[in-house]
Length: 386
Image 1 (cartoon, rainbow, N blue to C red):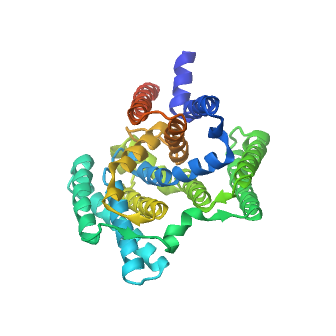
Image 2 (image 1 turned 135 degrees about the vertical axis):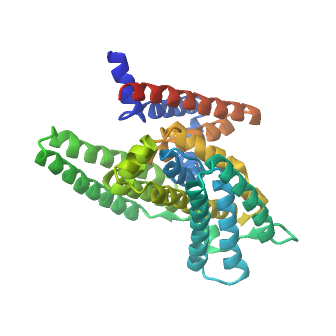
Image 3 (image 1 turned 60 degrees about the vertical axis):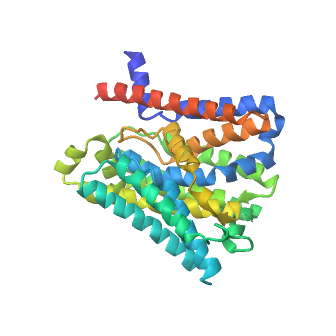
């Protein structure tokens, strides 16, 4: 009985615990194999490497939570990046306008897919796979026939990955985050007290704030010992924090999880299931576009390789490894970060120890397979406990 209770807790409240333990073990091994792994420079590079995967995984979380899938995120990101780069480089638009256009394109692609899947009841797997192939063809049409490349060298979008925050800015942002966290936790604590629910001020409000302050200070200190906190890393953490609030403290988030748990019951409860499905796919398209543009900025250009399915596979793997259930109804936005850290750490560490390409692929595939097996097992245990 106690074992079943523990498994139920791992499937729900403590779903991220095995992921964090695995991350600690991975870091410990690579730090032993090559001390450079935990150097400030490598950790800074690692954090930049996982930004794109984390953003796309965050977008995928919305469709995975409702029990769907989107296989077009890599191609959506590439097409959006091509349009943004083309507008900025070839047509003379300012960067803000070009980026806004790319995000709108991503949203439109996601929205159309959501409408087709929702109203025609077509399998998301096939619809998004077909869309991916179409978008790969459109990408080739958008690229110059002579070079198949739109260069971002010297463009603002190509410089964003090289921007680091000054130390005082990082500290100020951390203080703001701690203050906001305190406000939200105080509201939650007060609500529990009003409803006569058990709540400890120390463990509900003070302890999380102290933990956030300590972890944040350590992270900033590590980054500042190299060049500072990368702007893209701060941006990713800001996105995760905002959508953590949206998915846990708003009706929109609660409804998404309800649809993933039981769509028919959600519909009978008065939830607009169709609208929220389309919205989820639209959000995924926006994050895919954002990830595609950041990836293009990091490699200083858009090419046919921008639609490489590696990003798709790594983003899905990150979400699942981080704890988002493929069966819908469970998962946290922080899964995008923890899962991306696991995937990125394995890839980064194996490069440092000069592992072969086939070994890297085998290890990453094994980790993903184990994560899916664990997810399926915990989901069955959680469903039995309902």
